[in-house]
Length: 269
Image (cartoon, rainbow, N blue to C red):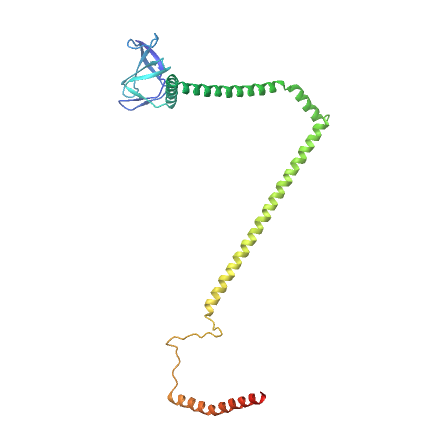
């Protein structure tokens, strides 16, 4: 075994004291060549370190097959999603290879899809190359010269272009001001309408309260019954006799008036 100073390649948690040691932390370790495992004739190295809290032994080794490290003893490795992604991609490739071997039509479809993806990639690369070639054709020296001439007033087209830009800017400012003014007027009009509606509602409420306070009005042709407590007293017997005598006295006069009206109507006929 060799004593070497290393930085651990992943975050691990000790099984004894649950202490975390984060990726990149330096340790004094012992390194040895594993005699029980190998991969395609490549040596596999095993490392021994100690937990900084409880001094328990932690062992991990290299994994040349996956270009990674494997935890062997004394701790657990933290979850790393990119490792799962790589494993899923490898599993998908293996599954696709099995499908291609068992089903010729499936293999043909997969090849057609791959060729389509490759064509799309080539088209995108051609677009990028065309854009780069267009940028390379641009002469920056000529552009700078034109800018200098425009600043010095030698290029009338540039001056006209600047004037047009200023006019456009002024038009944009005026348009924005008009739009703001119109929006303000609309808001004021809506506020006035809302205020008028509030005043009308308030007047209606006040009128209803006043009518309620004044009490019920006596309408034409409508009789209001009084309560039993307010009922008028019945007339006495003497008052009833006087009313009967008045009716008797009025009776002959009314009969003579009716006979006179009948005789007058007969003569007219």
